Every structure is written in structure tokens, then in C-alpha cells.
Image (cartoon, rainbow, N blue to C red):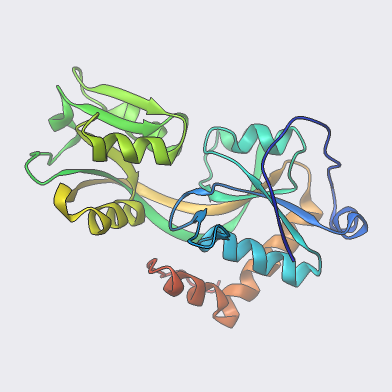
Length: 251
């Protein structure tokens, strides 16, 4: 059973252990539904994407219904720490700074952060973005990866979510976009008239599942779940379903 929940004000009963989730009778998972192919609303207006399918599999193996809470990149940690969700599955990359607030699972997918721009833009290094407007999602790994290497004269345009950042490139509001390699490829494929190209890879970006610090019981179960998904081939099958490259080892 899948229940859709859009984040709203008001108290939410939060779980600290697997037993708490089982007693409640549902698992609350935060997913970004404006970030295809990881999460979006499909043609039937039902959530779909790699993160959605992974969340469904997690709920299935846990034996409880799934309730999705929509999040954006900047709202993932606040939503988790405010106890509105039990788990975050939303292209969540671990960093030392985030780990001060969040505990991260083993990796379930891996992409690169890249600069994508129209074909005519000559960008071979970060220095070539001087004089350009470059879009990132505020506080996301795109922002963290690009801001330290942005040259003088580069204007960084920060957006609240991936949908807004992506649209800024398509509309010509910015000259280039920092995003994941899968998203960059999707934008180029879906918008051939824009002649978009991946110009430069900035860094690898492993994707993990996040829980609140101190929830070791839940984190141990999630890591066991991910090991099973890798070992059984189910995780690779989800990647293939959404045409996302997969190269993770089982161990």
C-alpha cells in the first residue's frame, strides 16, 4: 500500500527503532518528487522513480505500508530532524558536515556532479565559467562541490529545488547548470533543441539513505536491506528500469 503525504504543519509521530515503526503500522519516507528519474509524479499522477521504487521495496521487506512525505534538497535534513519522517531516500549524498546531524547508510547508487551547458559554451575547466551564470540547488552537493572552485566573475544562481535549477537552464536564465550526470543526460535527451552537453565532471556523488543520528537499530536494518537488494539483483533491476547506470559491488 502506498500513501502520498505532502508536508504540512502539525505533529507527526516519529519512530526511533524498527519496533516503533512496526507498532505504528507504516513507515514515513521523505522523497524528492521533483527530481526525475529518482522521484517524480508519473503520467498517472502516481510517484515513480528509483528512489520511489527503493522506498516501496524497503516498506515491503519491512512489512508495513509506505507513506511518502515530499521533500526538496534543502528541506531533507530539517524534515528528518523535525521528526516528520523516519527515513530520507532522496539522492542524499553523505558529507562530514551532514554527518553531524544525520547517519548515512551504505551506497545504493552513484553519479557524478557535472557542469552541463549548451554546445556552444566553451567550458573545459571551472575557470571557464568566469562571466557566466551557473545554477545550483541551494545547499545541495552541487552547491558544495562547485562553490569552492567557482572563479571570480562567476555568478552562482541558487534555487530551492532541482526542478527550478533545471528550468533555469532550459529557459536561458542561466548559462550552465551543475547537476548529477544522470539528470544532465536526461535533460539533453528530452530537450534536443537546446543542444546540451556535459562539459566537465566535478566529483563523484554517492547516494545513500539517511536517518537521524543515534538510530543504529534502524540503520543496521537498512544496511542489511541494501545488501540483500544488491545481492538479489533487485537494486540493479530498478536502475535498469529507469536507465540509470549501475556498477556497485555487493560488498
